[in-house]
Image (cartoon, rainbow over all chains, first blue to last red; front, side, top):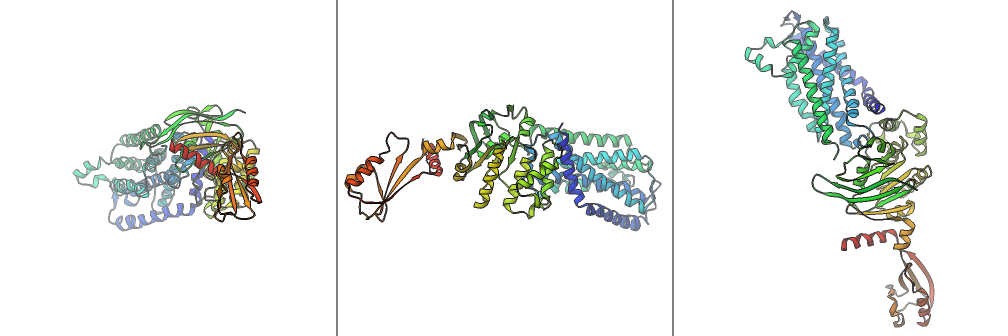
Length: 253
Length: 310
């Protein structure tokens, strides 16, 4: 294992993040505040409580998940796509590193950035609402797993993408709708029965439900199922990455 | 001298069916400067890419420092520094950060003293904290070299290091290459500037259409392949080559003031002595004579065309 190389990639990617730390910090703070103004104050004043939790607090896990997923994907996909785009990938390919080390460096950095933003949102949210986290360890575990698995997914997108449109395609067309329809801002028990059933095919529902359980002890689906869903997703991503590694798909001609 | 890079029957067929390397065999001696000369699309870059791990060869084998490039890729890549043809650099990054990354990627611990030394040698030290996008093309090329040298390679591949570089910078580059050679780095450079190969290479390999046509000492190649031209300036212009000189295949310049005679230095006799005698017999008074060695460019064109014709 070329540990120095993993560290070099990781630190290099993180330095890009720290170069724009103010933006990285301020934008989630502002967007979270906006969500609280719109959903918390405007809508929340009409919805009193959801499953015994104040609406403002209820949306916090969904908000964090929304940002963490999109950030993990965009950071990881951009991180590996950019060197492909500008040609600096030659250096990765000619370095004594294997694909696993490349993945560790890029995915590790993307997951760290997403985790940082998740924590910023959590901090911002706690300024608006009273938050009591019932299962802090489970909460962190869900968050870290989500960061890692979606960063893996983003990495795959970055390898697959051949232009900037494709880079945006899946996050925009697949992830955002799934997250919005995945119960970020509502409990799926508020939906008509038929939609409750349809919603169960949305994997994001399981992630948000499990994450919310870690906060408030309330859940849409069983927390075990949630854990299984995120582990399953991680495995699929790892499998795809293993295949990319074996075939050199879109990396090495 | 031992071969540090050994290529045996290396082949590369791209997915589209294009055969970029048709069985290249080549031995590169430790410490030498080898220039790979060939027209665009000859396979120079593909050969380098295959040795460095950027493309996967479809046949044959190669070793660097005795290690197989596929099975022991970590060992071979550690020995190799690559300066690519394109100025592929992250525009917003600082020079020194980019160089540090390269060292790390090759599995080495940070060594600020070494990096300072490399940057100073390449006149980049003052620019170390500049964003790469603010540098000129020549400076960017130096950054690529600095990155390649950051992990102290024993073999350095320079893929067209002076393409699109002005004359002064080209000479700078040659000095850098000569300096590296004194430190024992083996250098393989591709170029289609023949004067470049002639000026700095110990040996020249001519590659065309995915095959190595020949590899030879620069001097030997020049001597063996070199035809020379004798130019005779006349005191009084003539209208035609005098009949007594008919056997020499002389060319008369348009103004009739000079004759040129082409000969082969390797032939049994160059015919110069006889020619000079016959010139006197023909009653021609000479103003001056000079000889010119045919350039590598002419040799190269001759070789490639001979190959095309066969």
